[in-house]
Image 1: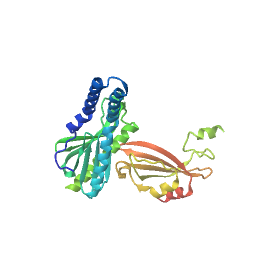
Image 2 (image 1 turned 90 degrees about the horizontal axis):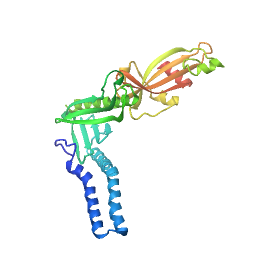
Image 3 (image 1 turned 60 degrees about the vertical axis):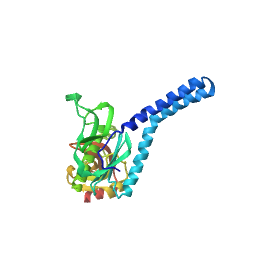
Image 4 (image 1 turned 120 degrees about the horizontal axis):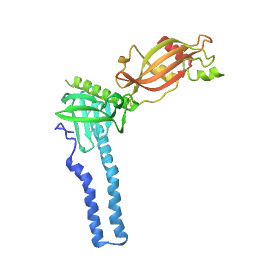
Length: 194
Length: 114
């Protein structure tokens, strides 16, 4: 767990996740072309890495993130952190200990680095209901809560969609309620931390 | 027969004699259920055990469900029932989850006393 500046994306991990399978595929295809142009060897060298790469891109990142999140939660528990509120957002998990005024964070694109810090480091927390348009076009496709930590803006989505919904739609209202509750919890933790 | 059918579309009509029922009591309660973790319960015992009386909507913590209770009584046949509307208060709006009509005597007694 780090008290260092928050890094939402580990560029080495991001590029590795995306491009290492491509490099392995390219290597296997080259070996196949040079030494096994036909037969079982060619099938294994072409299909194997391709299928594995696709599986990796679909499931690999989420598998690592879920595993690291579980490990993080376990470590926090061992350190006496009370998990009063956990929000499993898209690409990030926020864990709040209201009584001790602490916040835990882990990011999808930086799963090997976890953050545990005092809630007093949160400069500001607010809700963005994503409202845009006017009149009958007024609506939103994303609701999130945001917090500013050390000058870094962290956005956690409570609702996202590729469609636009009216502001009184059940999806939007649920998203707003979740975001409001998380902001209120962060504020409570901030007060306790001071 | 026709009135019985019409009664199906009027929740404040007595299901027995199709008379408009009067509201004996209206009360707002808080439910110990959070947004994103709502579980439906239709049994009266759950509500008797978990409802917490509140005076106004603002008393319900953010992200928690509320329950609006209406106690109805038929002036003609004396039939009584409770309507429970479960909703999530979100700022100045309400997201309705479900509505139950309960005839349970204990539930009626609970609403009258609390």
